[in-house]
Image 1 (cartoon, helix red, strand yellow):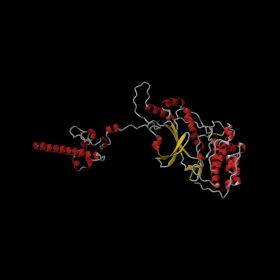
Image 2 (cartoon, one colour):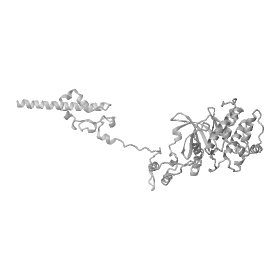
Image 3 (cartoon, one colour):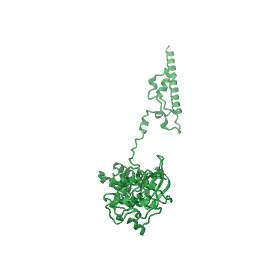
Image 4 (cartoon, rainbow, N blue to C red):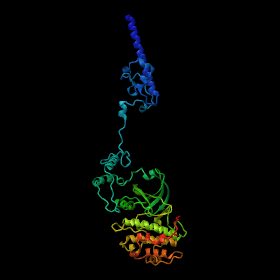
Length: 437
């Protein structure tokens, strides 16, 4: 009887070991072949053969076979299988392998690795961190009344600007072009003495914009501040249906980029050689009078009204290019526009009636369109225009010619204001055409 008991005990032990080995082998093969994260405990409890096995023994650390606790007796893992893909969600080693959260920079400054053994070298990552801790300056807008010029980080910001001068003004580092990244350049649509204008497709919203880029590098702080005057004037003016919309700006490669509303064309006679009817000219004059009234009420003057700076979009006239804009009270430096459209008083450095300068320029612009030829920049005809000696315009109403003569009056006091011009009864005529091409 004792011998039978021993034999029975050996058989029971052997049976348990076989079951244990088959379950372990099955579990390991299942983990290697399955692409989903199956639960090992559920597998053991659901197996038909697990009813005769002690669950406490199976779930013990000695038996629990996972890729993180592989014993030397088991075959090696396949090299093609990544550890992160193995089903072990509660593995302590996986918890240690999780990457720490990356601190995102407020400004996407390029952090390029660079090795320099010279003393005093400051890595770009340290500069970027300093620029993050010290935010970019809140620049004072001179076109906004009561604008705050308080800069609580002024003493700390100067240290950052030594290493990253463009970063404080929204620039980007070498090798990363915001213009090329955000826009697809279609064609060049304009050029001037200081800038070029491109038609560009913005990749993120799929819309077309006009992007103005300065032609020369702006290395000095004074040059950058002067270039920013146009942007600050546009931002201070705000939205008006008869003013070209401003979106944003940035410095890149020591050049200023300005993203603006894209228009169809300007009203320069170079765009169209045909004569413009009076009704269409009155429409342009009326909309420009409303635009000038809007900016004059904000204390801002344009000082460069001319056909090249009056644009058309979907039949609406819009005033653009605020590069010469100044304040009505004369507190900012005066930068004269195109001399062909400037009155005599501003050519003589008399700035008492700057708002009437815009009225004269608009009158000279309308006169050029009606005349069908470009105004001269010198000579007898140039002088006669500034003295109010206008020839008659055949085919145009007397009321229209009287308004034009009043706008070109040599005395700025006798010229109408933008508000008076916009409210003139001539713009209420029922037969006035509203079609613009």
